[in-house]
Amino acid sequence: MVFPLLTFLFSPSIWANNMSTVLLANCLVCGSDQLKSVYACIDHTTSGETFHLHQCSACAFLFTNPHPDEQSIGPYYESENYISHTSSKKTLLDNVYQWARLYNLSLKHNLVKKFASGKKILDFGCGTGHFLAYMKKKGMSVEGIEPSVHARTKAHSVLKQKVYSSLEEIPSGEFDVITLWHVLEHIHQLHETLQQLKERLTHNGTIFIAVPNHSSADAMHYQEHWAAYDVPRHLWHFTKDSMYKILQKHDLRIHHIEPMKLDAYYVSLLSEKYMNPRSLKITQLVKGLQTGWLSNRQAQKTGEHSSLIYIAQHA
Image (cartoon, rainbow, N blue to C red):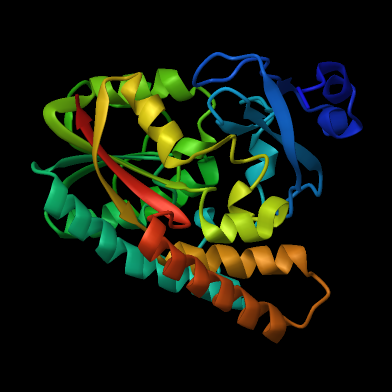
């Protein structure tokens, strides 16, 4: 069904809390106006509101539509449950996330070392700064950007240096490495930001972009309950095909794709909680781990892991 514009303009959830929204009538990738409703997803982190995912009938790009604008999105991040901005270890999932973060620091460092050269790195959307702190200890010259005041304050404390709120604040100069670890899906001005980042990349520089992959088996299993849709904080929902098309628009060429295998387990555990909130925690744990394992097993054949890291350079 083609996206019924008036229905969503007057949907009560859109105007809750005086929220200002961005309503897209055209696909961000190909420009088509043939959009169809796919899922209605609940924000389990803060508001409990329902947000809709729409897909382009021409190129299959998926996005949250409508979504809060840049001035309205802030409150949707203001929760201890939004774990990428905290160091909480209150629950089992908190502890799983913090352990996975430590593991991923080593993974990310090894990927940068393997696929990039140079010592100057920018982490766009650096959160609480743990990745940059790790890279700094490894001898890298680091800079971070984090729009969240709460997370930026923590990052400043971790790094013992200034963390910027936007790309415009950073002194002029280019970077050998630019990283976006689960950040691109949050960026309102997607094309403008990618273009600005490319312009700050050295001629032989490398950009690393990690995003969820809704073509994965765990995404197919949980459907609208898949935690990596994370509405409304996640504005865009990517596949390999859409990532190739988007980066190509900015003369960036993907030359390698790497999986983030732990994400299948964490996302599945959280999705199980969303889909079956009344079931026993041990049942959620067992089913979530099983789904994560099955997703990774299938991805060995298809390459469609729950999260993927795209490694690109100037075309």
